[in-house]
Each structure stands twice: as C-alpha cells, then as structure tokens.
Length: 107
Image: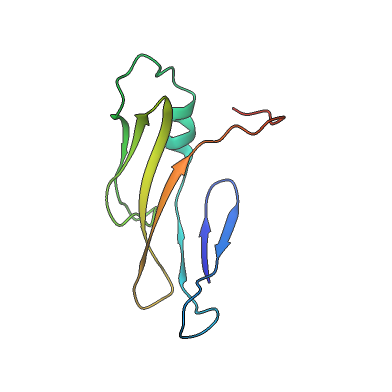
C-alpha cells in the first residue's frame, strides 16, 4: 500500500505483485500549489514543451529530483518522482494532468 498526500486530499494506492497481497510501500507528500497556479496562467501563446515552473527537491517535499511543470499540447503537465518515506527505500513516479469534468466548477 502506498499513500500520497496532496494539498487537496489523501490518495492510497495498493501494489499487486506475486510475493504478498498488499506490501507496505511507504508514503510521500507533495504540494500541487505550483501546478494549480500554472493552470491559472494564460499560456496559450507558448510553444509546446515550454517549462513554466521548476520545482526543486527540499525538506518540505518528497521530490527525488527536480520536477518541471510544462505546457504541452495545450495543457499543463507535471512529471513527479517522489522518494517514499517510512520504508527502507523506494520511489514512485507520477504524471499529473488537469482534467475538466463535465458539470464541475473547475478553476
């Protein structure tokens, strides 16, 4: 089981492997504030692949390496590599993309 905490909610993900059903996988925490702020920017005139924000690893996040928020295909995206806590070792990679759901208020 892996738990990650964003500024919006706690998410839990379970591993599925051949050794045991639900091994403890640790946890990680990161802030999506920079991602949300980038969503609010008017970026439509930028070329695809432009890095909008660079987020550096620090004691306040679980980033294993620098994470870039980019403008790609008319959307904001962020790839994140998080170092797991409360386990011997491990990392998890996430790709964040904003999805507007029909009927939602959005940003």
